[in-house]
Image (cartoon, rainbow, N blue to C red; front, side):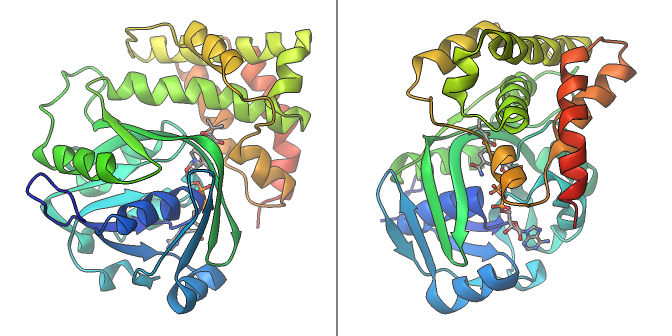
Length: 323
Ligand SMILES: NC(=O)C1=CN([C@@H]2O[C@H](COP(=O)(O)OP(=O)(O)OC[C@H]3O[C@@H](n4cnc5c(N)ncnc54)[C@H](O)[C@@H]3O)[C@@H](O)[C@H]2O)C=CC1
Ligand SMILES: CC(C)(CO)C(=O)C(=O)O
């Protein structure tokens, strides 16, 4: 049964119903929320005709939700889960308006630290929630999403200027937290430290995605190889230095936190979505990850030789995978 605070149904559009978006949207639909998928191509055709099938380590399920490639046809919703790849952010953001009321929100679950500003420029900062997610999930075939691991965890917060105070938590965020708590196979937490949360994930993903993609090896091999493990740490340290230079304040040390967490998890076989895209000939998010870190470091005069090296190593393959 739906589980808003008063038992209400949330109206949710999933913009980019791929590995991440269809998984979380499907879980919320499974719980009875009113979810519409925005997708395209053969995947959209399959969602329309067969519905969504999710093969998940947290339990397989199927749901049948309306699906479209036209955001204007969705109508107004409470929340847009914004889950396109970062290279599609600007194009997709341009058609958000038709789905939003003044009190609606757009929650980005994307990797990278550039997306929220792009969204805020289009829909206004007050309607943007910055978010991160920890999951391994991909489109296995049209209409079929495969969730192979990760805790299925979302952390999000009202976006705001990096120098300003965190705004009050919006009432809609409580509705969404309740919806997530009631749903199977996912968990969400709210943060007042949205910038630190985004950069904390950015530091991890630059190391995890960068090193798994550059070496084509899973985490366990990287962790077992002294030189490679040193580079993994170095990438994180450099990204955190850029965050500090941008005025992001952490109440924890992301490098120690992630090195401890990653080595204590059952993680040895894991790669990353960037590695998946690289090895499947798909367009890569390199520009939004290491490319962005390098650009931001240059603007702030921070030395990031390890991030530059990973960026340079991956660039030819990223260029080759461009459509
Ligand atoms: N896949 C994973 O396990 C994880 C991914 N992420 C991040 O989440 C974001 C989404 O990644 P994935 O779900 O893997 O991507 P995906 O490629 O599986 O899904 C995105 C979908 O959006 C669709 N799309 C893009 N623009 C569209 C438009 N204008 N209209 C309709 N459909 C559109 C694409 O066709 C694609 O099917 C990325 O930023 C990624 O880095 C974060 C954590 C884990
Ligand atoms: C952190 C990780 C590796 C899994 O959530 C990820 O974000 C990705 O694969 O893109």
